[in-house]
Image 1 (tube, rainbow, N blue to C red):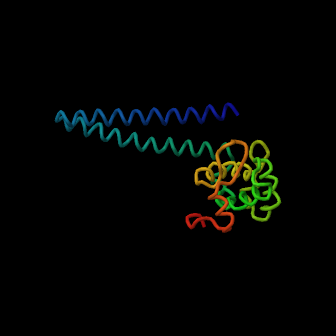
Image 2: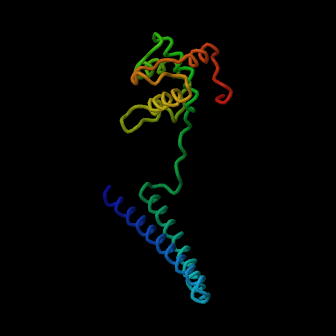
Length: 179
């Protein structure tokens, strides 16, 4: 809702202005110290401390505003998700099963049945497009697996195992750093 966003932006803007004011006061106090005007610098230091306290109150106001808008005084804990690396071997198995290369959609269809019992509640939560989160996790897996040398990076839409990926798949075990 636009009005809610406007209030949040206004509080954030106040917070940024206060931060700028504190920075300016600190610089001014430092300048007075270098000039030997300690009384003036002490006054500015006290003002800075007071404004810092106020800054905390504004931060608390913004937190409280979010609680009011979202109807909760505490954050809802996120559902547990399967770590990305847990999908590596099933992805490799899927590529092998699908003829040594596959598209993302074919891998997702393979994993839908192969990993159904392994999915955690956070994996199954829907994204804004209606697809489960684990679909995005699989996409991120591809990038990580390319970086780790398990998948070829070309062609972009085809997933193929590298010699290292084939060795890992044959051993059915990721290197010790993963599990």
